[in-house]
Image (cartoon, rainbow, N blue to C red; front, side, top):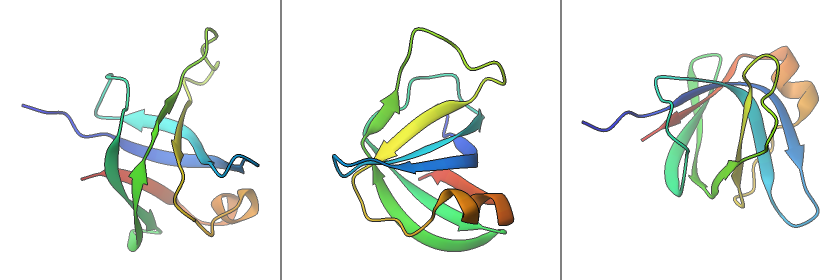
Amino acid sequence: MRQYFNMAIVETFHLQLGYTVFVGSIQSSNRIVKNTKAKIFIDGNFFQTIEISGEFLTNIKHPQGYRAISTTDKVDIDSVFVKQYFCELKEI
């Protein structure tokens, strides 16, 4: 049975290469996230469906266990926004 991930987003970055990166804690899955689809929810309400490009992997683990997931889809959520609202990524 496949484990779907849920991410509580705590930070976003918009990179010049066209990627949006979501940073946060992932519940429900320990696997490395690869190409998949996910829905963005804001305060529990559906916002947008996106294509996930994959997970950014580093040799150093974040002290709080945060992970980074990227997309090339246009997402109008910035760092200030995720600090004001509860934003989640849920794999579908």
